[in-house]
Image 1: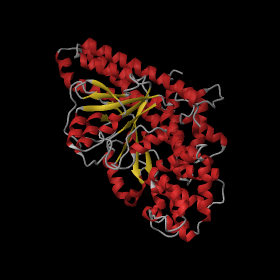
Image 2: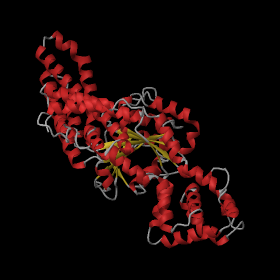
Image 3: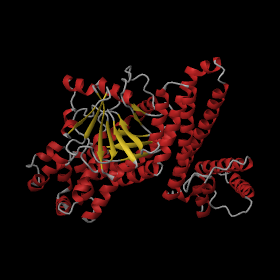
Image 4: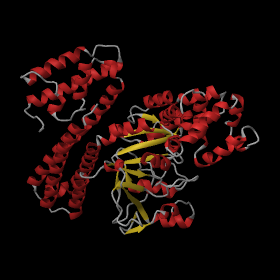
Length: 549
């Protein structure tokens, strides 16, 4: 596993390099006498180096983005409804609101900022003309919360892709800048003067599990969405609403349970198909996780024990009938009237699929209530999801943000070169041209450094997911090489024992060259990457270009 302390130190070194280069770029803009707004853009990028990485929750309409965010943060903060609800971009960050009684900060398109109560979020969740007109004057809503999760990661709840309301689609295209995403054809709107945009460093892309019946359609959709490839390591796929598998009209209770258990295999298949576009795919159910938290509460645990014991007393045929449709369940004359009455409140509070999943697991298990909860928690997928988010985004928060900042800086430099290059040549400002060339070279070096880090991170995740492929010594060596203990030269070579570092690198590279000749495709790929990294480390020593520790 990655070492958080060493990774933090390594990322701090990377941050210092980026800030130094941005300061150099800012000074160059000032020396060249270019418009001040260009210098302001660089200053904004410098400020962003101290901010947490920002992750967009994206997906098609009605994939449960708001419910997902509420469950992830364990707080009912994002409006949930039966229609398209997220009409505005909602930005959640760590901190205290300026005015506790009005915690929602509204950023308007003209640059004005106003403050509102939480009711304002619900007020905007409508598709009528008056509300759409009002929301069109808004850039985005900001909500500060003292939730530990938000210390390292800010979240953005976005309008659904493919929205029936064109204003929703235009808003995400105009405001949320997603690296590697293609929004060229989604909106003709331009940003107003003074309007702020939200810079996104990574994406959690949601898809309703029921939609996996049409894998090809989703693959085409995702290919259209993703224009660039190099950011795939910063995209996490999350399949939502897996509890709906329990409501499929197939077979008996056992077959429904088997269908529910198929969620992992389906997600692995999807992850394989999308391996060039995202990092991994996790099956989840926010509603089932909410139900687990409800029953885990001390005041509700006795209700869980009663629920489990009653379910096991019901004849399997009657249970199958009770769980066939929510309308059938509500008809208390069918069977077990007292059981139905006790749980009517539950199915009003939680989605039908979550309730059915809980009933199925309880009916086929002789386990205690706590063990049933553990199984339901496993099916909900949120523990695994949080672990993956921690490894994918939290540990790498600053590195992800720095990568996006370098990406934006390159675009700004290219903009300056396109608009002012001829002017610099015409006025024989050769020293400025040379300075811009040097900055460009440093930018490219840093860009490829971060790109290599993303590639290595992918290999590290594949290694951790297949930990038995190598012996303990080789696994530790690969972890170090892939950056688990830091991204600098010495951290990658932490197992070095030879006084001659070049000799050590060459010897280890030859060993891994031999390990490439295996039939197992993943072992071969990991060995080839090890050879490649050792080659780059050797090149660094030969050119006396060791990175600073």
